[in-house]
Amino acid sequence: MAKLTPIIKIALVGILGALLLVSVLSRQDATVYAFDFVLSIQIFDKGYTVVDLPPLGTVRAQTHQLPLMFRLSLSNINMQRLEEMVAGQHPEILFDQVQETLRTQVMQFLLRVLAIAFIGGFGAGYVYSRNLKKSAQAGLIGLLLFTVLIGSALYTYDENAFIAPEFEGVIEAAPWLLGVAEEALAAVEDIDVTMQVITSNLYMLFESLNFLRPLGTIDGDLKILHVSDIHNNLISVALIEQMLVSFDVDLIIDTGDITDYGTPLEAELLRAINNVGIPYVFVPGNHDSPAVISSFGRLENVYVLNEDLLYLEELDLLIAGIADPSAADTAMAVRPHEEYLHAAERLRELVEEAERPPDIIAAHHAWIVNEFTDLPSLLLHGHSHRSDIEVAGETFLIDAGSTGGAGIRGLMTREEMPYSMVLLHMNRYNERWRPVAGDIVRVNNLNAGFTLERHLLRPILPEILQEEQEETPEQPDVELGDEEE
Image 1 (tube, rainbow, N blue to C red):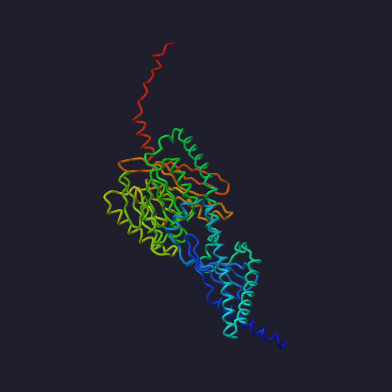
Image 2: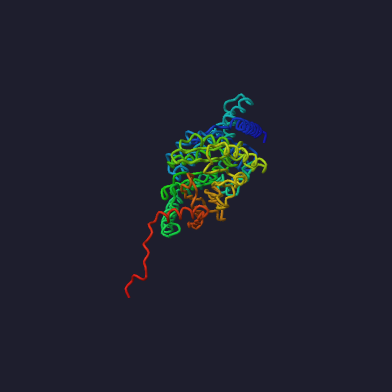
């Protein structure tokens, strides 16, 4: 028994040395395409894998049995590399490559941990014994300890534990972030074909409707696609592109909430709107941050209305718009009603100072545009996620609903949230653009169908019909008495 005492002592020394050095030196930087991570391992924890996503919070799941905690912390996103990565790869292939690269980095990290465990045991053994043989024994014992711990953790590791994870921080409100990359990018590819079919069917439906006499005059000299509340859903971009191709749209107006958390990453993923080829007017919502506004403001075809009048000369169209008060920072909560009234007052000053009345007034929240119902104008907003058209005299209040089907979350829920938008048909009337019809388009995600509501904006339509009738040559009257009996 006395002979075992030195062996036990050197084993304890090796174990303590390995534990100490691994605790101190286990952190390792890793780069996976555009993402920079810090990998680390903590001892005497409850078998968790933790993913840190600053500033949103932390996601963790109990993935294995032994008391080791694996931590993956996102430290940086390289936007240039991200743009190149997203633009140059098929979504499903891209996700597989990112996953495979991350696994390779993790395996390299674990091998490094084993090397540190050996060095820690060897160093502690040498300090204790000043003997190379005993130091090597201590190092091997430290290596054996972590080989057993890591091997057992990998053997019992269950990735499916992240199906029901735990959340801490702001991320509690967004469990969809776990699946956003795989679910959204893969779903875009699958649903894009469906969207093309649906949009083609919509086009044929519109063509059929225009054969009806009352609707024959509302093709519109100007077509505006009103979208809103995309909420970081890439599928909506594909749908918008198909609508542009099918209906020869002249202009897109987006009334905000293009992202969910206002992060630069979300803005980068939505840069595809720069490829639509027509002017894209963006009015920030409460989910859009200064970083998002700055990012979209740098795109060539995007016009951001923070508190501005925009004159599009090629269309002879004047638009007034103001950003949501919450877009001034990263807070997503809707501000008090009074702040929206103040924003409406500032916007009214712009409108009154304009050389001519704006054709369109746009904001994210109805609380702002509701203050302009006294004007004969087209008022656009979003936020409610419920598409609607209201007419009051010569004022038209349009809500596009959610063009993103309430965002990525719409892909992962059993509750139906349609992708909705409004196609506005505009004609010139008294030297101003006025709407003659609005088509609410709702595309259903779950059953791959669609609905169409065509609203005739009748305060203007009768005059246009009258003008058309005046231009139609009158038919000669036929006298009954002239007929031979």
